[in-house]
Length: 109
Image (cartoon, rainbow, N blue to C red):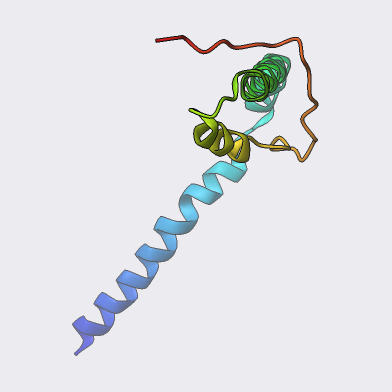
């Protein structure tokens, strides 16, 4: 019976050690270098975010203008679905403005 108790005791100690050892080592490690490297990369990430947001606004405006300029009785059902599915706000909750400068043409035939 003592071997069962020893085995349970061993399992508890191993589980505690396997869980806390990586946390302990992580807390002891000096994270300043990794923090500085991430801060150096922050302006690149911010620029990529702004570029993708601008591209998203452009595509949404192109689709809105395509719906408004090319809606016919033959494609009205599809244009209504497209218009309904277009987002009115971005992921940050900002309203997407309407611009007539971006156009898409539908290929004929």
